[in-house]
Amino acid sequence: MNEIGAFIIEKSAVGVFVFIVLLTIVAYATLGERKIAGFFQDRHGPNRAGPWGLLQVVADGVKFFMKEEFNPDRANKVLFIIAPTFTFMAAGFLMAVIPFGDRMIIGGREVLLQLADINIGILYILAIGSLGVYGIITGGWASNNKYSLMGGLRSSSQMISYEIAMGLAIVALILDHGSFSLRDIVLNQTGPIWNWSVFTHPIGFLIFLVATFAEASRVPFDLPEAENEIVAGYHTEYSAMKFGLFMFGEYVHMTLASGLIATLYFGGWSIPFVATPAEPGIFWGLLTFGVFWAKTLFFMFVFMWVRWTLPRFRYDQLMNLGWKRLIPLGLLNIFVMALILLWTGGAGMD
Amino acid sequence: MAKVPLQNDPFRKYNLTLAERLYFPAIAKGMGVTLSHFFAKPVTVQYPEEKVEISHRWRGRHVLKRDEFGRERCVGCQMCELACPADAITIQAGEVPPERRHLHTTERYSVTYEIDMLRCIFCGMCEEACPEAAIFMTPFYEFTEDSRDKLIYTKEMLTEKIGGPIFYKD
Image 1 (cartoon, rainbow over the protein chains, first blue to last red):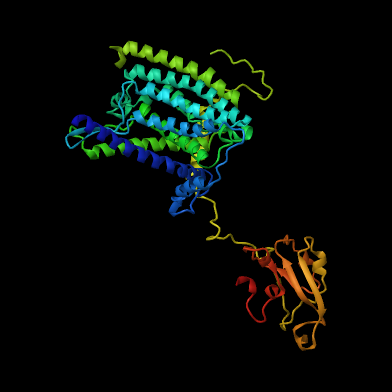
Image 2: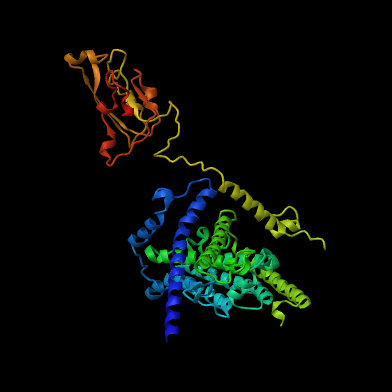
């Protein structure tokens, strides 16, 4: 009983800590996006609300709450309200299995900076990650607006197409690491920097990166909200905090997708050439936590960097790239990786 | 590798090379271009704190000049009112009372002289039309008020003060 109580307290504490850090980073990602957009265009970005524009986030939040809450006349009220909540929730659930840091020993108890180290972590991520599309298509359908519906449809077809490519990239990775657990994958990448999967799976990394951009519907794959064709896509009819939740959910998705790239291909919380100490204290835990976020923030920067570099794809180009390029490439990648592992007797071969 | 057949594409003049078809070299190049802008100095002028240098010939707020004896140059001929394409100027002319003759060049003068800054398009036709060189435009451009009435400038606001500084820098 005492053991169960300690377990609940430990997981709650880690959960609240990780959640607060995640939400803060996501909230400031909206400011960061605008700042970085400014820098890319030789501007300053928002700098009026507070020093360096830091209070802009608060101002945006207040604005979302103060705006008129408008519901379209013919909309399906229940679905219309559920949709943004669902998008946000589905994105947030991804947090559960991402290894934010290494284990540490606090008061004789081993605490893992990860909510749940389940042995099917990657399957969980693929399953929950694709749930997000339900929120988007529900929102598009419930709005009773043809542009919203088009946006929702585009989003679902895009997710289906790119999930396959993403899955194929992950299969090759699993073959190599021999485990579905995200913590095992990170542990496999500790040690010298060339243990990072990005050096052993360059093609898989590229496929995964492109598919992640599509999954998070970021430029150049933000067709669900292509404003020049379908107004604002699935959130055309949304206003006030309901729109805010869609926005926020998108940023949560982007943040956790960056975290996933860092975890799967860039060693997650591990520091190259530095091994976990025999008695990892709270300092080691926070250090690995910081390393994880440093890598994640870098990939969030890459997301924004690409946004200000590449134009949006045309819809047929998107489908071409997904089905005719990435999926065959992914299959070839698995084949080659399987052959290599067969010859060398890799981790998954026992 | 087999030779790539010419694509039946009216928008393409030649076959793309392998590097071009892979997109990645082009994407890397583009990302390099954007990154160079990321580190470039912003070109923004932070307006209320910084202001751009403007020409002394800028057509901004009007001023009604006085001559070297401190007399109003405006004789109330209404040429500017007639020339104004936006109908921004309203003048009522009258005869100068005897006790004020030293302030005017002729016996006719403008009793009221109003410019509606919301109508004015700052074309400078009033300057061109003025036969007495009385009206000029100045480089002042910050017309911000909280009511429309305050933007109808009266003769007192427009006329140069006697011996005083140019009013528009107040």
